[in-house]
Image: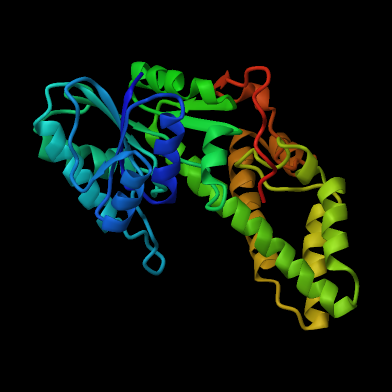
Length: 333
């Protein structure tokens, strides 16, 4: 069993700690909220307001809040928690693994957490402590269930040994594991995950506005397209970056529909952005292709490429961890 220290006992931290405790791992929660501490203690968990580390190697999860402040992440509470962990590392003889589980902007693990820990611990990452990123994919209402039955776990570290240790820690929960050797990649996965969900919701809200103007059933239309569109049923469709969409249909329908919506008096800022991004990518792809020859440019932009990616060719560390009998989590919105 691994000793687990969870710094930040909000929704994510509580689910993380309780999930590991369900397998018998010793878990200690750390939070500055007295009510959370009292609740966890009443449930039989060890909890306190200071970071203390055991004498043998532990896994320390940073599950601290990272709210937005306008168009920026507010990392003040996250940084304060990281400082506390660094100070605890200074007084510990064991080599612990610090894992960033909070949602943070890409580059935070190595650009903020690492130097803060090194400064306050008085030791270097990879020598005095291990460092990794492990973003969470938990919903607030079903956080513990989502932790116990994950559909995917993402782990990233510069140290292969650290990746393997965390893979072993999460293996009993099942699901698919994706690994990276750069923590920024895992951090970007989480940001993309949330932003993709938000974008899909906004897309259908734009289409709902159109359906309201036309007097047609928007929900039934969305449910139908969810089954008819390749982008909905093929996970590899459209995820190959660096190429615009093309062909006979997508360019004309995106642009034509903008005019149609305008005639109805409906603004479609998301669809406008879709067209704008594609025009930028056309310019970039044309410049790159022309550098290789005119025939290549015509082939790329005239061949109807829609960004479909062969997932079998992606250079990801992928380990199947779904043993027989482990239920798959419910569908996520």
